[in-house]
Image (tube, rainbow, N blue to C red; front, side, top):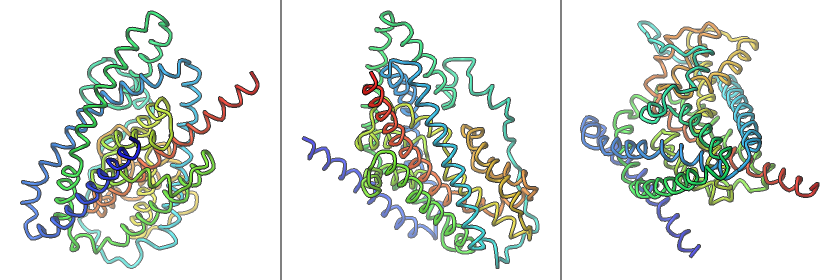
Length: 413
């Protein structure tokens, strides 16, 4: 039976990869008529993403509640939560530092003759610290579910999960209902995931058709430096963390992550990749109650790929405008990007908002965002891949740490 499952899993990965390759080929073929790809192929990708979005909210809500109830201890949830947030903050700081180092060493903005005249960019207003704090807590049960406001959905799941634990025997019916509804949601999710190859094809084709070599070549160095940082961070930071925490080899980890990585790259959606990530981490040995808590939280607040993007783009814009950033200013960028990764995670266009905040923190002109806006989708595909891989790495590490903590408690008991 396990061999059959492996075959099916490999088959879906192969089909997704095929959809990605065919999408790139079709996109190149449609370069002369990108409107055709946008009008007639992209809608199928949008339909697929809509289906993913439809099922993601119930999956996140019910899986977190299920995970909390299965832990049966409010203090244990707190222990996992602290480890998760600390992991995300540390890896985000490493990511932004790596982006800055590579951008400086490789002189990402040197030698460019791009005109900066007439550039303009209207920065979206980033929420303040207290506004962010207030907005985490919903005033209505149903509105966050309808709007897919993920931080608020997580808060709802936490409170109702705790409520079921504290209700004891009287909460058994609610626990059974959550288990039943969660199982139904997972089955619906499984049906939708079967459509992934078509969705991937329809999502990648218009991107390639609209962003051909003519647009990408002038900014190719920015893309290459960003992707070099993405790959180094994934291979070095995540592999080292997973190896030290759980003993899992990097090869086994990335083999297990093949499906989520392919989907994240083509869809540029962290939340949309969540079902793939949950399945992959559980296949690699993480317990369901851990992955059900850590992954939805990571899809909302973990933005390592976005942090790398901030560092590379900040240095690029500074060099284009002839500004030499001091060490103190670059440390400010690290601090701002790390903290902003949580504060702006639930805001649409979070990458651009974070970049605006980073540029403002060191006095760089916001108009520089217009320089990278044209290649944002290409950069977004890579940074989403990094984000979801970081979520999975955190899940494997937290699961391993919790297993060790439980083993120590049993020895001393």
